[in-house]
Image 1 (cartoon, helix red, strand yellow):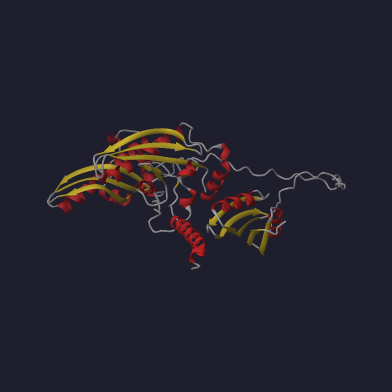
Image 2 (image 1 turned 60 degrees about the horizontal axis):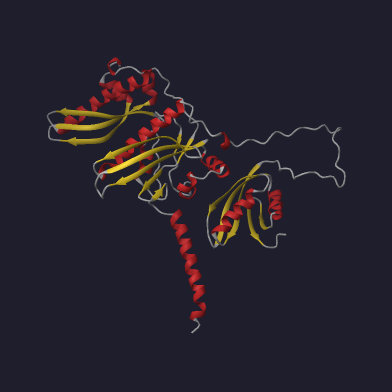
Length: 409
């Protein structure tokens, strides 16, 4: 008959397990993460259409690929030099075979004696650059962190799970683009840091931390709003190119397909057009990094001659405490986090310490012990003293510390 008295504790335990399971589900799973394609060593020409008839389907396919290589070379030469296709120099099949590093099959139909396809050609950048008369390098923008946002119905999604919009950006070959895209794979802690709420966050402090974490100077947010008439039927996608922490729109367009099976192709075309919008904005000077995101280095210390320096007298106001100067050290700090609010309070308290450049929760455990990664300009003793001044009880030594509230003064 003691069960009713224990019922509140059982309910609280079940609620804690549910919260912990939700956080675990948000961080773990195999249906997340699409590694982007590395295209820094190739030139790409897509959308090449071929229609070949031969004695067999295999021969027609081989001849179609050879024709696609020749058409791709002329298109690449014309694109590089800004001239008509007819002025491109002709090359032998052996020379084209040496330059081509891959063929992308976008669409193909193989018959008994006919081959109809839309292909893409990948040219080796080092070998092709010599014949093009270019070094293979293009002028690039500052590194731009990419957070792709897709809206289906009333829900928004970025990296929470694999979606067609993230896959389209992972498939996109950025080697020929003037924009230096930084594309996160979407695994690990990416879904917690790079979500829809973050793209609308105006605060610059959190943005500086994220950009420094991913090695970027600014952020772009390509958005798509996908609307289906009915399952499997026509679909319309509205694409918006946004830039900066204020999500400023640089352009918008819409595409339509007749059935849902063609949605991946429509999204690939949307990525190419968005890349053209970002490249156009870069040429117009609209894709420059936001000055408010630049982390300014502290001013250099002024040297004072020993014979002119005056020692402070007792009772003299020395002003605010100076920021400790020393080697930058990365600390692993364990902290008790009974609820979600305690996580934010702990990060805020630690980040306010003079000399702390970043304080990021790398392992979240609500109702248990979370782990923070803290970058501090100073040694362990100075950081422990600063934490105790904030009211924390500090245990441990070196780069591994544990803090908790209570008894810290």
